[in-house]
Length: 302
Ligand SMILES: NC(=O)c1ccc[n+]([C@@H]2O[C@H](COP(=O)([O-])OP(=O)(O)OC[C@H]3O[C@@H](n4cnc5c(N)ncnc54)[C@H](O)[C@@H]3O)[C@@H](O)[C@H]2O)c1
Image (tube, rainbow, N blue to C red; front, side):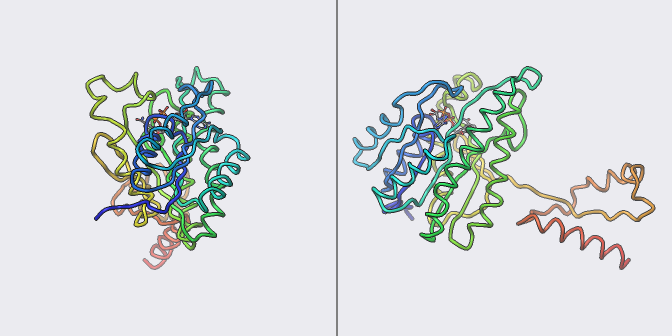
C-alpha cells in the first residue's frame, strides 16, 4: 500500500530546517504541492534568513512543486495571507503541519517573563494562528488534516523548559477540542511528540545518537497523521525509528458521602482517589461529568 499526497496542498510551518524540512521534502516527493514556511531565525527566535527558499530549491530540484513563505506564525494576518496565496495558486489547502518553534530554556527561577511570553506566542498562539487561517478553507472543502507538534516536555515535563512545556501541552489541548469541532467536516487533528537530532537538540543529544535520531525517522509518523486515512485526536511519539502513543486518562471517580466530604475525608481517601485501576480515555470533556454522575448514581444505589 503506498500513501500518496498527489493533488494535495500542504503547508509546513518552520520548514526551513530540521523536522519541518524533512516533512516538506517527503510530502513533495509523494506528490503534494508544498508551502515551505519559515522565518529563518536563530534557535531563540531572533533574526531572519532565506531558509525557506533553500528548501523550496531542494524540492524543485527533486522535481516537486513548492513555494517559499518567510512570514511569522506569530502574526495572524501573515498566516491569512499565506493561506490566501496557497488557495489562489493551487486551489485549496488540505494539510497543515504546525511545526515552527523556538527555545528559550532556563530554570523557572531565572526565566524572564518575556521568554515565557515569546515561547508561548510562537508555539501555541502561532499554531492557533495558522490553524485558524486554514480552518474555514478545510471546513468548506470537507477535508483537512492538521498536525500539532507537542513534545515530551509538554506531556511529561523537563527541567528548564517551563515556558516550552506549557505551550506544548497547550497544543495537545487545542487538538482535543479541534478534533471534535472538525469531525463533521472531515477535518482530523492529531498531536506529534518527536525526538530528533536538529539544532534544537544539538547540545542535548550525544554525538553518537545524532545519526540514529535523524529527522527522517520521524517522517513516517508525521505523514501518516496527515494522510487520507489518518486517525483523529491521537497523540503519537516518534524518534529514531521507534513509535508510541500517549493518552490522557482518568480513573473512575470516587463519590464521598457528605460525612467524608471534608479535607480530612479527602486525605483519608487519597489512596483510593489516586488508584489507577479502571483508567479510561475520555473522548470529550463531557465524559468527565458523565463519569461523576455515574459514580454518584452507583453510590446512591448501594
Ligand atoms: N528536535 C526534537 O527532538 C524535538 C522534540 C520535541 C519537539 N520538537 C518540536 O519540533 C518542531 C521542529 O523543531 P526542530 O527540532 O526541527 O528545530 P528547528 O529549530 O530546526 O526548526 C524549527 C523551525 O521553526 C522556525 N521558526 C521559528 N520561529 C518561527 C516563526 N515565528 N515563524 C515561522 N517559522 C519559525 C525556525 O526558523 C526553524 O527553522 C518544533 O516545534 C519543536 O519544538 C522537536
